[in-house]
Length: 364
Image (tube, one colour):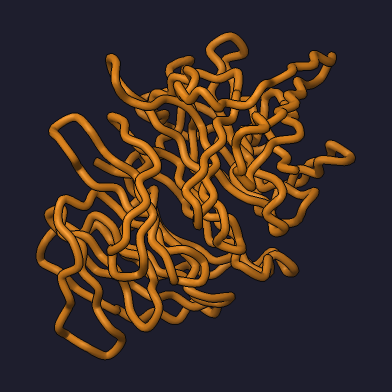
């Protein structure tokens, strides 16, 4: 099971989305919410119950129609994906459609500008920690090729000819990204286009992420850590679906398979020990650390009864969680934080609008 599944939608079916049933979290200490309707947005004010000491609270949620927000560049600039009707149509699954290109959307002025117009599907879009570069992908059905764009010059470099996974990749520092190829290579790529193969496996690598002094990877639900310069990996844990290190590489957001139909999200130390369980569900989706590593945003989807459902933000130290009430049925991409850690962007596909809707969640 992949953490996310990124696939362009050409009709009203949200084929790329993981089902997200936003029921209550079932916690007796759930915060009280007041929803305010306005012509162009919905604002939800969350008042935490006085009996909880959680450090996470929501002040408002703004809605942007017909927009698929992916990530923040600044507090007021979002990278979004939208159809580029200035380009020629391209063939996608037997249909002709305008390509989806990356744009900058200004939250204050509502103005948008294309980052690099071209007759190809662009997606993923992960900014470097310093906001100077953008790691993105050109997608063709279920495969992709990676690129890094200099956001000042808008010039891009291609990251080799290898076909890579459409849904994975993480910045190692301000100028290097780590990603996997379909053939099983783990590659470190620089903003100047230089490539280095960190690990080459004959087996299918499900997850590869940068850690402190090495990389984490998952093969056959076993989590390994490979130190820099070593060929001998350390086995850390079993029944692991995927893992995401915190920005400081001191903690892991780790998902384990706890039954045939249940996945459990937990926060552990860098070795996969001392777990704090956050929730269990059929699927865990969209997980994202805040820039300071103090919070974790994620969504849970459960089929039937007994599991958790919804979008949550957790305190990474205490494990205290707050449910986020969004008027959505599906999320389309990973949750993403603004540089300050005060905002989160989430996108969903709307059957009613036959288009995407973006929510910008502001924390107190």
